[in-house]
Length: 289
Image (cartoon, rainbow, N blue to C red; front, side, top):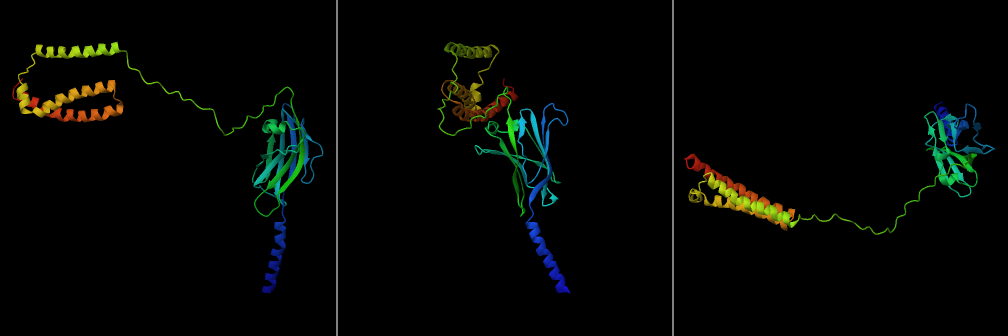
C-alpha cells in the first residue's frame, strides 16, 4: 500500500510538471479607447483587444487625443503581476522603436495612457503607420507574450509645429578658452601716500612735545635701563621692528612673508613688554614718578 501511494504521488507530480512549465503570459479584459479633449462620454473610439488577433483598422491619434489601454495580465489562467509589461511602438520603415511601461497592480490590472507629447519626434514624423505590440514577461519558465495588437496612425495638426529634438552632445576638440583673470590691485596715488606719511612723521615730534609739556620724567631712563636693560631695549626695538614690517608689507612683501615676521616680532614684544612694564610698576610702587 505504501508503494502504491508513493507511486501515485510521483505520477501526479510528473503530470503537473509540464503543465507549469507550459504556462504562458497573456492578458484578458483588454480595452483600448481614444478620447479627444473636450469630447463627452462615449464620444471617442473604444474597442476590445484580443490576445491572438490585432485590430483590423488603424487607430488615429490626434494632437489633443489621449490613448488609454486597460487590461489584466495573466500567467496561464491566473491574474498576476508580471515583471515587465510594455507597449512597444515601432516604425517599420526605419526600424526605430520605443516602449511605454504599464502601471500594473498586484492583481494584474494594468493601465497605460499615451498622447502625442509622449511619442518621440522621430516616430511622430514617420511616413507610415506605427506598429503597436504588447510585451508581457517575467522571471520563471513561463513563455513571454510579445505580439502585435494594433497600428497607430499619427494625425498631426498642421497649424501646430512639431518640436524637434536637440542635437546631442558630441565629445571632441573645443575652441580654446582664454581666461580673463582679475587684475592686480593698484596702490593709491603717490601724493596720498606721501601726505599720510608726513602726518605720521609730524605726529611723533608732537607726541614727544606733549609728553614734555605734561611733565614726562626722562630722568628715570638710566635707572630703568639699569634695572632691566634687555627688556626695555627689546620692547622698544620690537615696536620699531613692527612698524618696519608694516612698511615692507605696504611696499614689497606679500601676506605670507608678513605673517611669520609679525608673529616672531609680536612674541618678542609680549615677552619684553611684560618685563619692562613690571619694572615700571616696581618704581611706581616705591614712589618714583
